[in-house]
Image 1: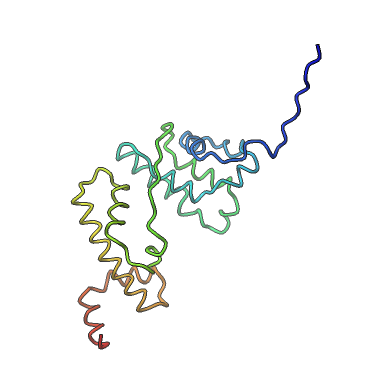
Image 2: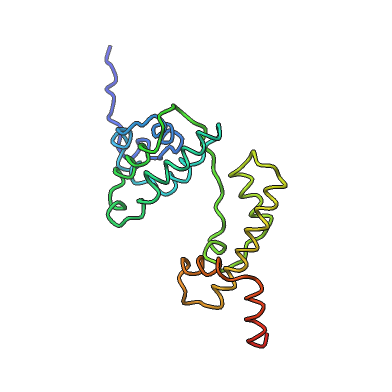
Length: 196
């Protein structure tokens, strides 16, 4: 009886999707070789910035959550946009693996970003959005405390937006410093002096 000869699978039909959750599990386990086992197409779909966002947020005890957040920032986030590091995704993979405490698979969650117009000070923050954001980051914090945090954030953000609009040539870092020095009364007096 003749056996059917198996045909080699065409490379373009191999699994080409980058599996985010498999990658997170590999990072949790400090699997430094995982990146090398990806196909070339899968490696192209590895987005380090997105992975730092997922890697840094886990559900679990406050100590483990805090560790992941600080460790991802220390090992990966602050170097990710370095012009030399950006050219080496395998190095970025190593940096993300290094951030894991090697406690096995964790449940990673997506924490939404504030909108780009809000973070670039082009649009004022809305209390509802800020409450939702902080509730996701601090799920165990009392809702009254979240309300207070959100109100304080919105008030300070409003001041930063005002400064960004008034002084469009200032860098955002300068606006951050200036917003700590300028009070609401200073702004009211400035507007009064300008005739507004």
